[in-house]
Length: 210
Image (cartoon, rainbow, N blue to C red):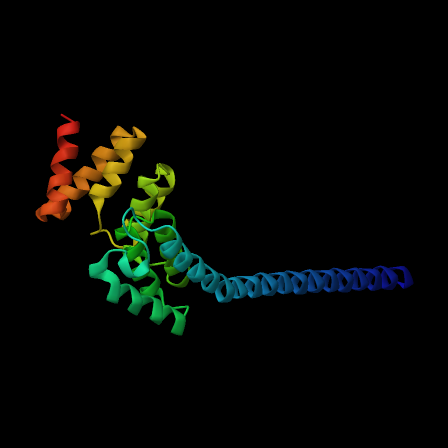
């Protein structure tokens, strides 16, 4: 009996040691997660402001051809651009303002700045399908085809009525014939070709596959 009691006591002690070790590990993991979350929050707080300064600098320092400043870059959009920049200076976490700035940069043929703006919009709102779609287009223009395909696919996973022709186009460039055909079938089924712009791109893709 005394031996049995000792064995039982040892088992209890071992169990307590295991529980203590598990608790320490769980605490360590929680602290690690908390540290990671803090880093992410800090990145979201600090990076966009730096990015905004970078974009403004680039819009002024590297103007288009005959243009010499932000005031002259795409003159028709000047008030719109200033409004968007003012919105971001007031609230750096405004996803729609970042998206709008991305659209302006795209129209000004500032691809790197546009991608930066779209990515900031997505950091704030990961389900912003238009930002995903526009980012995909900029990536495709930069020949970053796999990344473009991933952006389009994520946009379509959120909104299946999105731009299937864009996905078909990037898959055509990737040489993915089956994937391209599948995307074209979705485009037909969704009626995406009904709009003039999509219809022209859709027809061009169909010609390439005849």
